Image 1 (cartoon, helix red, strand yellow):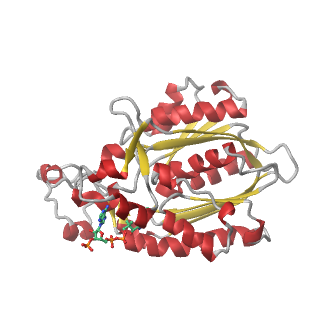
Image 2 (cartoon, rainbow, N blue to C red):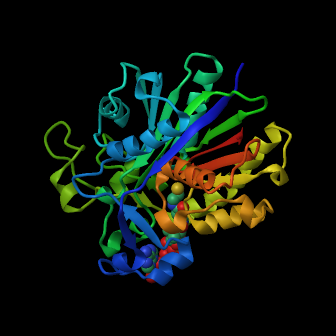
Image 3 (tube, rainbow, N blue to C red):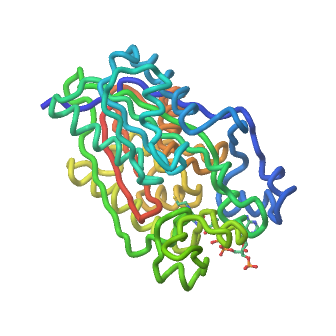
Length: 349
Ligand code: COA
């Protein structure tokens, strides 16, 4: 069985730069608070009525395909990872297929939030290894800025997230020992609501009845979107930041070590660790815990904030473009986020 290699990478971030100082003008926050707790200095926000999750994904995909030397008609399968799709349904996969004029190929959407890219990579890996597909386009894109609460009420969430897209083209490996060595996927739904956006949704669970009682309208249903819901502005993401932080600093090192041990490798062997850009403090904790050098870990959250599914491919693109990954180098990707879900992938470049 041939391994799967990343044949091309691309990224796209919208032009609009929003600094911590800009956010401090619309909510009670400060550059000092944000930098100290998260490391973030600025992020990009989509241009209203122009950028969508799909259009940004298309831009990243064009670059990835150009770097891989493949045309849209050569793509066999699309995987699109996002938590901020253009439509509730259908997913962004078909919108990208249409926008890029691709053949009537399969298009799969992945809803695994921050670990979405690595989950999607794992799915693509299986299709390539078995020989079913030769060229898979994997796109991860997020437009958070359209759906955040920019009042002081939402500040613990809103200052963290940013918009952007990353993409990779996956193909069978061409060199001995090249490609994805293994992927490792995990979930624990016990804390599903601690980092979630429950509305609009079809839920009517006890947890939310107590936490945010949005009364249903109409005799039979009306729990999907109610006037109360909109009046209460209960349509934003919810995050228990401390609970997420505590779990993340355990699960990141755990899933990285799992990948290394599965391949009889140790942290010393890593050329570059690309952690999901959740919070610079989390990345630094993981770096110190695994005793990695500064140059073994790539972080760019300072410029883009947390772009959820897109963060790993955006960082991968920048690291590759900046010459930090060389042929034969061992690259570790790792992510943790809403669900909770967490995952890792180990690959030889
Ligand atoms: N600006 C200023 N003050 C803020 C603020 C902001 N943007 N957000 C929250 N605060 C305030 C709180 O209201 C609270 O004030 P109080 O003490 O008067 O009640 C205080 O800061 C501390 O809040 P807390 O939530 O305990 O802060 P924290 O130290 O846990 O930091 C996070 C908050 C979100 C930065 C941190 O918990 C975190 O990064 N968690 C992980 C989040 C993450 O990685 N999410 C993505 C996962 S994929």
